[in-house]
Length: 566
Image (cartoon, rainbow, N blue to C red; front, side):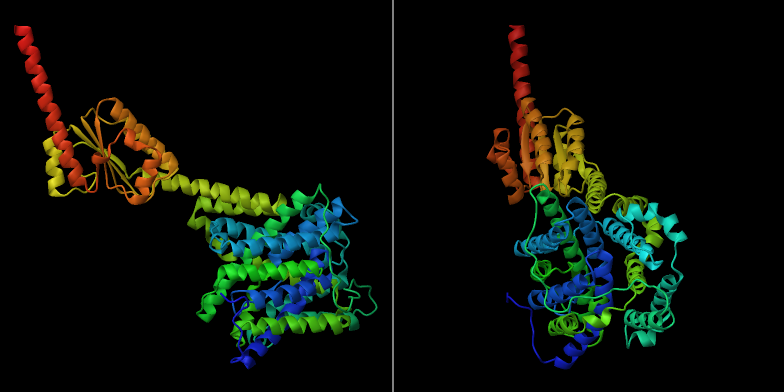
């Protein structure tokens, strides 16, 4: 696997055009996310440059555009608020350290090839989490949208202060915010293909604020430092290190999910296949550098990626071009962004929040699954009003418990005990004949499918319900996997049968299942010559054992009768 992404110059025109177009799309979003995060517009620009460049250079998806995204910005906003509240002097530097930690976690995820596991999360949880992030982003834009500063306390603070904010609306800034949303929503599709509506809204909103509202005091971005960023030295306090590691892991995992989902979209558009683990390493390097440079964390961005592909990009050269164009803006043209009104950026971020909401699933979730709907809304509520980590943890736990319960219920139906010829399992003619010949003295204990821990109750139930017999045949022919809990339940059934004087035979154990049985030392109760490959062989041996016991019983009976007679 090559260290850098697959870059060539055979599609130079398409890649350059894609990079330029993606840069135009990224500029207003980077400014908006920087302001929304509380770290300033320059942090959004540095994030777009650093994550975009290094993820494109070292990633595993040729056409992916990486930059600060709505979900990453919302999480970062929470981290900045908590860190600066706990430590006003070093809080911002600690927040940048969390970004570096997120990058390091992502690199580890990629090195240890965990990419395929990152998105193994129930969709109801992902939907609720993403929609919750969308709601948070919308709520946090209310104050700047109406011309006010964000109150302290994050989402709860905003909700509590909402009546006060609405009584102090700045009409000019609110008009600019409404104008921004109107342009983004109402701009004809044919024009959207030429120029992104966010950029049009940014330019028109700024011009209107400088002309029509020139005599009104309006909150603007203000001066942005021009030049290369100041390196941020990792900063932490012993009391906060645990919190920072948890926040870094959460930010890293969210970035992985956001990126890999976008990479799947890129695959569907380009008919290619991304390299998940390589992409995570590239994203991790990008976020590590971004944190060092004082930038926002980033991930694969759907809007930028789609625009990049649609304008002709085919290699990572487009992502590198986009990052270099934004770097030029930071180094020499940052002064042009100074008059941009905060309300315009709030309108752009508000539209991103609306887009993040999973409208498709929200509208039909109740028709698909009541449990899935409850999980989705529960995760959404916890995300908005409690904690992002708690929301995902609780959502995944409940969803997995419900899934395991359902799988266990279905799998339990494949645990069957039969002692005569019936339709519980499919038997061939010879097997039916052998069972009939045993006259109910053989119990066939049939298991099918993966024996996960939830099936152990069904095994114990069938074990207790077993009729009196001479031979117990444990049929594992259709068991590909045997869990520890299920193995213990089977061991108990075999042990009880053996202690009651029954012969126990095992049939069809695969090499993997046999190794698991060996670790439980099942040979204490089942000798090696009582393990068979096919059910017919086991039944033949079972019938022989039944006949032998019957003969022995008859001989014992005759001897007893003779002794009593004498």
